[in-house]
Length: 116
View 1 (cartoon, one colour):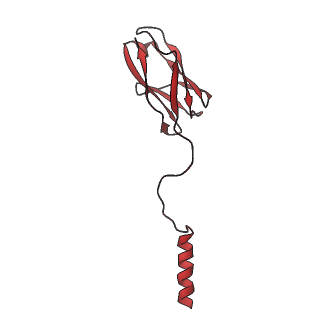
View 2 (cartoon, one colour):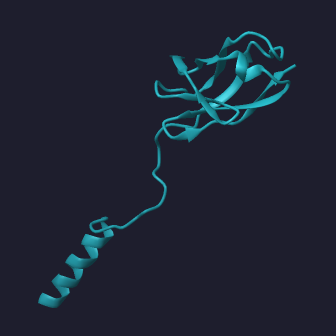
View 3 (tube, one colour):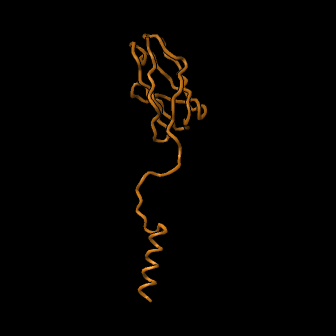
């Protein structure tokens, strides 16, 4: 009887999660940010710096805009809109510049910003 009680206690303890070592992904939390559009939609190579407005979803107060892999000064507006300061040096050369946002440790999709 004593052994049966000890066995049942052990099974119930582990079955209820006591001593669990689950290291899988956490459920819930915030979704990764997503970029939908830029304003302006392009810039001229060799032009003046500007403020880039990024519209999308999942932005947080700790969001950081990465322009060509480099973090830029970012201002939070709402969960759907942030802005970043783009310098003249950032648009000195023509090409498509990859832009993404990191919010709460999660990266958004990458979109190319055309510099013509």
